[in-house]
Structures are given as structure tokens and as C-alpha cells.
Length: 195
Image (cartoon, rainbow, N blue to C red):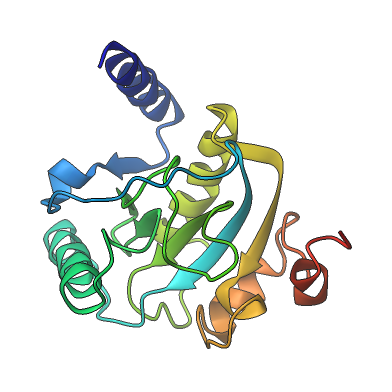
């Protein structure tokens, strides 16, 4: 309990110090109690999988809170999963919503759930400016995750469609992340770097 409190205080102070994104914890967005117990196989995580939820977009804090709750209900009640599938979600309000967090295995990408952070844009996020609040939050969140030791500095970013038969995160998002230095082509990813 003391370790969790110290971690939370460090997280809060670092988050305030960065000033470029705001983390909304599960208790603050109204999450149901999760029943997950599988930690990531490696911390810091080696991979980041970028996804979109393909549901309703959200532009206000209230709408984003409601959308995240609906996604969790769908994943737990209809899919039978122990919690929302994603590690984190990002709304068009520019806030980062914590799902399973930095340490717990997700249910977002078969074969990568145990070694990646699954970060989902809420909605379809079609043709948004790379300068808008959600993109800025993603950049800042990734930097922050590296600084606090939950994401490897050499992490590999991939699109959900790089390793699954899905259209997620859509061509617009995929084209944007393909410009980022940590993004690797799907052939590299499918072979996990030639290993």
C-alpha cells in the first residue's frame, strides 16, 4: 500500500511537471472494479500498439468519461473480459484515460498483450490534425512513460493492423504514426525484429 501511494505521488508530480497531458484514473472516470491479475511480462514495456475504438468520438470531458465507461461495459459484459481491453485511451478532449495501466496485460492485440501498452484513440479519429490535443497528449504520454520507467526508451510503435487482421487504427492514424521515429514496418514487427 505504501509503495502504491509513493508511486501515485511520483506520478502526480511528474504529470504536473510535464504539463502537456492529464491522466484520468479509473476511479475518476467511473470504472467498474476490474478482476485482472496478469502483469506484463516485462516492465518497461517493449512495444506500443496504437488502436482506435471504432465507436463514438468524444470531444468533451463528460462525453469521453461516458464513452470509456461504455467501452468497459462492452468489454466486461459482452466480451467477458476482466476489464477494459486497453492500457490507456485518448479522447479528442486531449485527456489520457487509464484502462489497465502500465503494469497489467491487456486484451487488445493477440500475441502482444503481455509485452505492450495498448493505446486507443476513442472513436475513429478520422483526419484529425497532427497538432490537435489528442496527438499532443499521445506524444507527451509516451515521453512521460519512458521517463518514469514504464516504457523502454527503445520501444517499438506499431499500428494494430500491423499485427492483426483489423483496419484499426485506420489509414489516417497509421500514416501519421509511420512518420514517428519509433514506428517500425509491419514485416519487422511480425518477426519481432528478426528474433
